[in-house]
Length: 262
Length: 353
Image 1 (tube, each protein chain N blue to C red):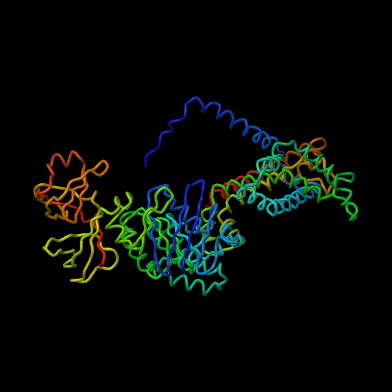
Image 2: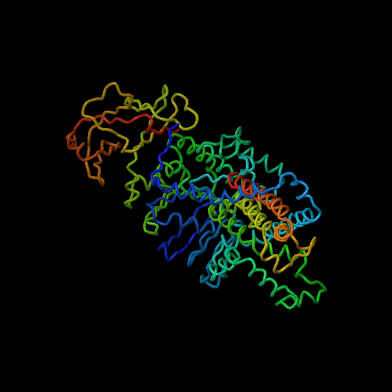
């Protein structure tokens, strides 16, 4: 087999490209170098670490499920319909991608908090949302949802409507077409979107600490725990940070696999 | 299953009206942009015309109103009982061939086992029953299009729309598929959009020629092709058609000339009447008989020479050859000259008459 020649590639671009790769790689190496390996296992299995890790996994899973349940219909509406103001709606949905998470947290607080826009109505039912585990999930959904919507909308647009037209001409109603044709064909996009949403939820800090606070076992997720431990026990913070790095690497691997599945 | 169609699509400048009788196949011929695809889209429910009315098997599929206090109707595509077969097979890549074909029956509420057994029957019918368990990605283009035919038929539509069903296929597999289509479409109500006069000749009972969004010619296929009035039909009609009998693997004319060609489907039996069809552009013209060539050679006397676009059409009785102007000049082709028409066997399609 011959090798194709890269025509549009000036040789000098390799230098900045390599520098960029190093810039990302070096800090990861630094973390690994800092880990106190002799106590590593003890550090990541301490009571507070396990509590935080378990809370992070539970809330991130819950938020991923919520993202799928509301993100799939959103992506479908954005990809398959056209209505006035659609561009504005899309921009608003994608806003959390560029919004500082702490601003998102504030926004959630003034919506669902005790004196928030609809928080008062929620309180009538007898619950408060802010500073609860539910608030953690809400903060994560707020920041992670755009990842799923963008990924899936892209997959739906690339796939096009041709298969759906054929399915309808064979007598399949819209729900059947969605379940048996649209969804299976967009599955790689959905999987990689869900994986990205999970990763974003797992790493969520700013919105969580603003909207949900940092109550151990209730709202203190792993990133919050790392931030707190950094002051009192840097070794524990680094060990936990490495755990998040490993999870992130696994997630990227999964997302790549999801994309190449079809 | 009669279709009655009237539609106006203003921004595409299409204004077309026609009927298709029960069990009849109508071919829509015409150059690109003539409005053929627009017509199909309206019938399938993918495009709503500015004005129009579509009725199929006694049901109103579409009515834009304005016709003597009729209500507005626009039946959803999946309730129209109109199946669409496109250029690309568009088999669902995540389902097996069998489940692709079972898709229509399943959508109609047929139980899985029953749907699959019906699907298997249709796959057998189009000649790829043994490929049922394959994934679409493992089929050749011709096999995939056969599966798509089976899938469309399995949905038991009242009307079948074929949009250039053979345009995307390798020329080597089109004759066999055309023969299969001819068989399975025989008693069905069908509309075939095509560029190919062979499709019209062998699949359709009647042709409509569209040009500039209007029907410019309509009638029984042979009539339109033998006495064309529109420019497009005239260009199509130049196809060479030779009638003879099948002897020893070739068509034999009354004068003893033999023509070898590609047989679609099963080989005819000896003595069976057959038709050979080939394009004038596939014919090479010689002044002396070419030797040592695997081509078919037919002696002919030039009766007429006329310009045809960039080419020159050489007529010799019922046969036509299209050659370049320099070639015509060099051969000194004028009426009365004795020539030899030569055509490769691979350019000749042979069908049972």
